[in-house]
Image (cartoon, rainbow, N blue to C red; front, side):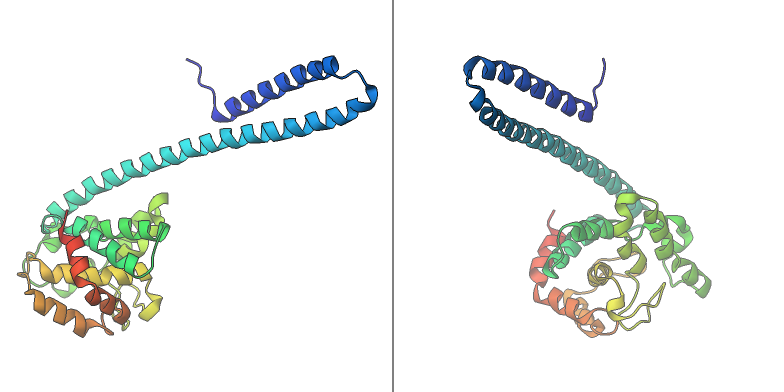
Length: 269
């Protein structure tokens, strides 16, 4: 079966409709108008009708093509997202994270991002960045990832390479480049003592600052291989004390002001 490109189909329909209009309207005009003095006026009117009609036709045809392309792009994005969710589920299992860890931080990070005023593509980048925040850990050995005790200095230095690894991975994928801020910068600290770049204050990307608040809450609120879960009151007290040194004070205040709402987002499927 011969496949016709959208461009050729649109151009072909336009040419056929235009040719039909010129042929039939010309003959009709010749049949109806016998006064040579009025023929110019009717030709002008016919020309304007042609422009208006073909303009409306092109508007409809281009709009239909754009809608089809938008739907195709939406379906492609959904397919990509489904594949990423499968990858992240495998990562959570490998890292011995609590079940639903990555989905939980995505839901809460999106809620806090909306409260902070993000929308559109910025929200999409938060969604994918939060989902893939630890993608760089795929390059680390299990002996470090699931070690029950404290890491030694050499292991710590190796662990701290995962943000850069995650950033490099996402930079190779066009639709994830904008999401790389969270994997790269969510271990930065407001006071500049974080890693890997030692960024300080608002030099840290907003998406990463948003996610850092959520990540700290989640890490403390749920058990890990190296620690039990903290009581909720102690978690919130820690966030208050981390405001202005580890975490963005404005975002901590926003998080605490809307804590019940954000917690419901995180824990409800």
